[in-house]
Image (cartoon, rainbow, N blue to C red; front, side, top):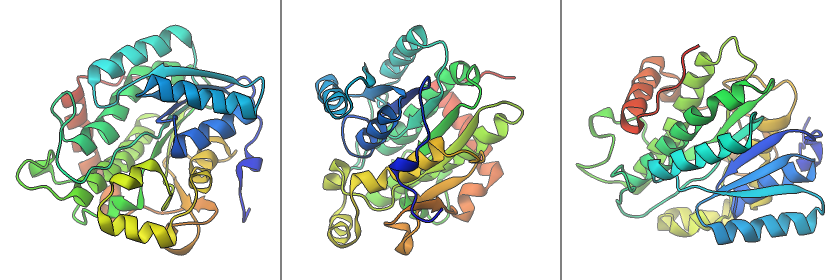
Length: 300
């Protein structure tokens, strides 16, 4: 299938989807497409007012759509735990968890728990949320966990810098962001191995270069390149939607734009770099993530 679009999303009636970072950009476009196909969509957002506005936009475009809002700050483990508890109370089963939210910063800062901002929000927050909701996902046959990475996962060429994982000795914005996106992939691949024998799969996706609010906080070189190469958020959401909904998707795979340098174009299956497939590093990252978050995934 050459030009896969949101029109190719199959019927989602009866399915529950949680999308983090769904108040704008890629998350909003992802949620909009799922709601249009009948899914019950939960917008998991940091800012409730923006979330409510996003929900209104979706229901105005698709009257009758089921859209609710859940507050969550992925940079606060207390907030992640509170959101997970609320979601567990409201949903016995979850069919789709789309770990989409992300941050990009020009300077080093930390989350409310003291973690480096990119690593703590983009990776640890989603790691914790997934672990806290995993039993609800396992209870839904055919459920999927889709985590959004980035071409930036290639920036730290030697892989995760375990000797300074919080970037305390020196800080490189693109390196820290890239490490968090590499961690998203390593998490997906290790999670898929742990899901073997279940009816739940873990998949990754990336939007290529997309014009979203996050780019405004990117280093100058990224913003300059974006003027020429980046595509719309609607196009950028397609790899996530394909990974989340197309029949026949295999666990542990990765989807991104099929155009030049995977920066734009219609979605297809793509490949991540060699460090992302290092199983020893994946297991080491997993152990560190459990230790830092206090979230231990249930054993089967």
